[in-house]
Amino acid sequence: MSAMTGEPSAAPPPANRALRQFFTAFNTNKTSWVGLVTFAVVALVAVLAPVIATHDPLEQNILDKLQGPSAEFILGTDGFGRDIWSRLVYGARLSLWIGGVSILIAMVVGSLIGMVAGYFGGRLDIAIMQVMDVLLSFPSLILGLMVVAMMGPSVGNLIFAIALTAIPPFARIARAPTVSVKERDYIEACRALGYSHPRIMAVHILPNIFPEILVMGSLWLATAIRVEASLSFIGLGVRPPTPTWGGMIREGFENILDTWWLSMAPSVAILVIVFALNMIGDGLRDFVDPKLKGERGG
Amino acid sequence: MADAPALSVQGLTTEFRIGGRWHAAIRAIDFDLEKNETLALVGESGCGKSITALSILGLIPKAAGRIAAGRILFEGNDLAALDEEHMREIRGDRIAMIFQEPMTSLNPVLTIGFQVAEALRYHRGMGQAEARAHALEILEQVKIPSARQRLDDYPHQFSGGMRQRVMIAMALACKPQILLADEPTTALDVTIQAQVLLLLAELKQLYGMSMIFISHNLGVVATIADRVAVMYAGEIVEIAAVNDLFDRPTHPYTEALLRSIPRVDRTSDTLMAIPGQVPSINRMPQGCRYAPRCGFRQKICEQPPELAPVAGSAPTHQARCWVRAGAAS
Image (cartoon, rainbow over all chains, first blue to last red; front, side, top):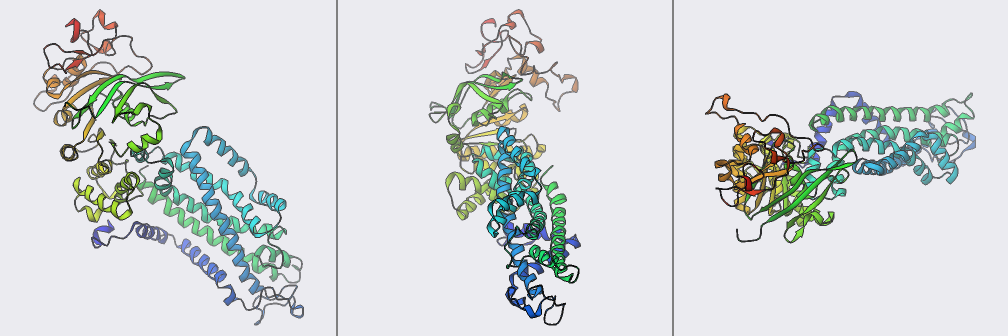
């Protein structure tokens, strides 16, 4: 319909239109905007960490240790005299990086597994989903803990561990709609046009199920950040001098009765980002549910 | 007509597995599709029309079905024996199919321009811009109004008739030799039906295609077909040039089918329903499959009849009936 109003030759490319449609739907849900803005601010802080941080996050100054919030140290200092605000800002980088990369990997791998299982069906489907169910039966923290404990704590292993725990849910969320979409007449029509299976999956099924995967992605990014913080908290995350939110909570925990703000600042940061991501997820779900379901033709 | 036929189906039998046993959904189907010819497959639901088309394209689901016997000769290849990879090169390129349901046969999340161009990019290896230009050309050929503006529209922005035109454009994109049209007008309004039929006939001429037109609507068949094969319970029961068939319907089923079409110029008293139902696939009668519903049933009908020339009609007119055709007549 929108094409009717535009210039004949200057019809917007489809990606643009999908984006506009997305924002229209997103707009109706105000809390999701709050989430999106909050997330954008945190992401911006992470990117601009070197500019925003007031101190070197690793610089120890024993004379300034365990100070309360002040003009110089906005959120005070920790037991080694390091500036909490600067560590928090740099910690955002690592938290978002680990969460983002691991969820991206899980999204790609999980969706692929789920689509293949759902598309080909039969014994392959049963075998794949059995394996996924076994993985799914472990709580993500326990599975992450096992992997990191076996492979040793490092950013790479952490990402691998979190991705591994997040693959099964993505496989499930991709499989279910694939099973229903592959029965549609237009997939039959694709087969009659001689398209190969990979092509049908990538070009014709994926765009139909992508919104569901995206919703799942935003919700699981929150989980990934939480798991990363939990693993860092119990000492299986990134090694100590590097600032991470989970690690900072742990460091502050030692002096929690005297200087409660040490743990408070990173805790609030985690709370805020998890809330923001859930709000985004809710907004995305609203976009996915009524709009596309109707168009897909039930 | 002296040329080799565009497609020759010989003794095609396709079976499905039901409860662990294989049952023939279509049995010993024989027909030649000449170049530039339109052959109509007619029959009620479940008689095997669509299965015949899907067998030709090799789209019978492998888990539950198989081509058990017969040959499908096309350009020197036996499609029934061809592997999936070569089959894919033929599908959509040299043999294309259009489906009954235009409302659901287009992908809702892709633009129609993309969907038409995709066949060209896949089979012809065209670049994006070239395929798009060709897609536009084809959409204009199928008479989509202001096709240029509508290239980037999505299927839900089109009406049923327009979507069927897009389907036709997709099928014709690679200029196939054979078009399988599976009830392409059934889901459309009557006025739109006529337009689409006209369009198909016109494009068939333009592209020099042969067409297998599947329908249960004998009125539609009379307008578009050169020859008609009437199918019943998985068999061809009568095959003839369209005029011969309408002049001298020979098989009792064909006759009954013609009598069960409502006509404006007759009262509803003359409308006859065919009693009974098509026998289910796993409970086929031993002899003539139509015998249980037939008013002309005789003792000999317990033997399976063969297709035999109809006495007093053109030599190409054949019917599968002991009583009306062949030796007994």
